[in-house]
Length: 442
Image (cartoon, rainbow, N blue to C red):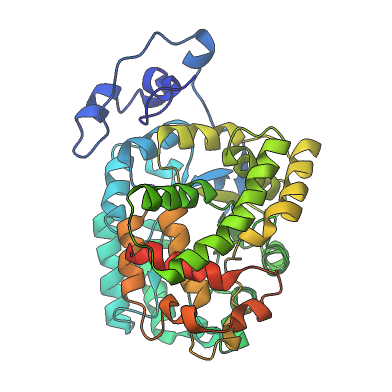
């Protein structure tokens, strides 16, 4: 039983929002308004709670199997914390996210939470003094005296892992009691001209380095090989593991809606976008037929199976979930402690066969060396994912506008070197054209 976009009655009437209070949530700046609804049933009144906890590697901390990613609604984040979620992923580069987290955790038992933030090494001041200053700013924005983990975000080369200024700064922050653990996050570099920039190669080198305690990596049922090698190394080295990009389900509904809206508005569509849409739509139609064949209500059915799949791996400690609404949060929380079933397996295998060619693998980039113009395919498709799947439209468009050198508009006149090089058979040239049009609102 559904209510409006604020979320299901579960979150509006149960004790999950007890501390925050539905009234105060509605009054919070920028919060969604709460509307009246019929009294909830007894089942709906029962609060959702996290049911699964796992040890985060050598940190020894027992983290919830469902963690939080880039959630930009304070009420949704508060609700997940009330339900027992205790792993929070954030970053200095997430606009306003530190302060949102600070507001959500205010007044909570600090010892019950594991908070991890990230600093990129390809931007900002990476001198010792600069990194100390950046780390202190992160702590100030989070309202913390100590952060549980500070990650080197997206190191593009193995050499970056050994950055002396970073490790000296982390050691001094630990000595001051401002930092407990150090980590690395990676989901594919900007350029793939050098094999050392691949996610698995960088993270395997980080495991051998020995100074990193927690990894955040991309891993899902369509993209397992590199990630599984990293997970195996983490088990051997007792490194904690947090996952992202676990739900490789294409937002074909939003793409289809975009096509229909352009046609209804009678707008002239750029030929390069029309070609991209035609390629994309052909595979999207196959996906829609798949959903109808298996009687799936929505792509959410597949996403839930995706999360259960990764949680079925004993080497996975927590899965970072980015909930946009209370409905999203409820769906994720219901997955905590559940098992990957035979029916889940059938759905994912059928999806792989029918729709696997709609997913551009995060952290792949195998096609990029074939591009004569140096288009950063992996990065552009990741920004498109931010826009379509995570609702981070403005951020995605800003990031795309800042891409140096060649962007996806160059793909219109290309014979399609990337498609020939793609080992997964994706219509990647057409997908890049769609991404360009979306990220520029052309």
